[in-house]
Image (cartoon, rainbow, N blue to C red):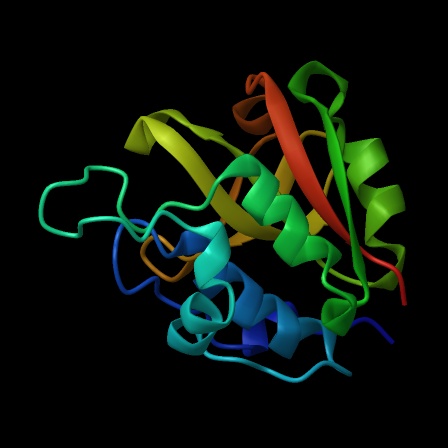
Length: 160
């Protein structure tokens, strides 16, 4: 029986750079079988992967690097595997194949924030991708082209 992901409350990122932590917190609840860690505790757990220099004068303070996101996804505690791919190769058919064990983390370039963003995909039709977006703590569906226009997408694919 399919999980009703809409019944799992979305997680609001607590600042503009914590999308990856909020997404991972929701993902752990949605997928089940993993310890759920709050986004603040995730920031502390993975401090080596995000830009923690000079919070008062650094515009990138709190952002996670590409390699940092890949390292977090590949941490064995999550039973997830990072799979970077060219955005143009991203399709709903491919996404549905990757969701065999549950929701998939998506890291991509988001034009609305003029930077990288992380959401959790939990479903896809032929043309649209359903995600939990921590920016606003909401469930949304956008055309697959919204994501495939990124030069690169990082998928966090559950392995069990």
